[in-house]
Each structure stands twice: as structure tokens, then as C-alpha cells.
Image (cartoon, rainbow, N blue to C red; front, side, top):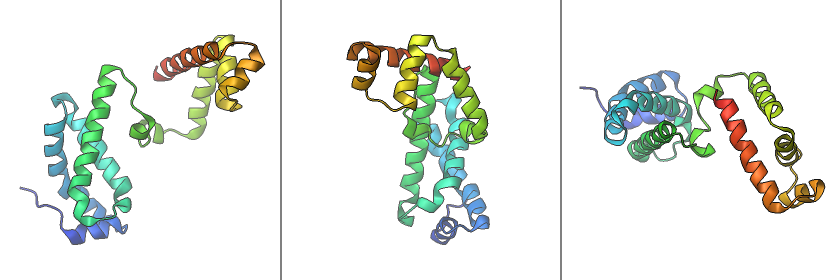
Length: 172
């Protein structure tokens, strides 16, 4: 049976000791797996464990109270389980939940920019115009409505549809 991480190990890992971080990951894995079995669907347990370990590695330095390590770790696993469940159901997770998603972090910024440019170019003209005005030129809904001589509701509907199309394109 694996030993629970000691306070000294957590403090050393939090302070950036690479060896301590590796030991902490190994020591925390059984707890993470146990939390995931309780919080996740069976099919998502391994993914949740892997994602939680990666988040632990990246964010251990932000841990303020060493005594809160177990509850913090449980919260990380629970959020990962929720995110995986939402992805399985086809719902989009809020950006706060996926901001550390390694699928995007591992890709070069130029590749992401190229994909986004391709997605925007794939939009029909009336949707592309709205996305460019709102998300690139950062105009307000009222300014866009005035510029294209449309109602606020029409602008908001087109923006919503355009973002759905962009999301579809980028998920391919």
C-alpha cells in the first residue's frame, strides 16, 4: 500500500524541488485514483487520474495551505470528472475548466492561429463579418448593429451561430 505524502514532501514540492514533485506525484496517485473511482464514471477514471496528476504537477506551487492538500486534490479530481462527463455528453465546458487542457497547451501557438484563421475563413460572409467585428475588432453589440444596419437581436443571433460553427470546425 502506498504511503500518504508527508507535510515535508508537499512543502518541498510546492517550493519547486523537482525530486519532491516526482515523489509527490507517485505518493498522491493512489488517492487520486480512489477519488476518481468515487467521482467519475468507470470509463473516465484513467483520464481523470492522468489529468489530475498533470494539474498537480503544474499547479502545486500555487498551494497556499499544506493542510489543504487533500481537499484541493479532491476538488481537482472532481472538476476533471465533471469536465470529462460534459465532454462525453457533447456539452462545452467553461474556459475556466479547460484552460489547462494539455491538448491545446502542447500545440504551438502558430498552429492554433492557423486553425482559428481557417475556421474563421470557413464561415459564411455574414457570420464572418460579425465574428471579426466582435472578437477581433472588439466592437460592442450596439456598435456592430449600427455598422451593419441590423438589430441587436440579429447581431447576437448571428454571433451565437457563428461561434457554434467555429466550435464545430475546430473540433474536427
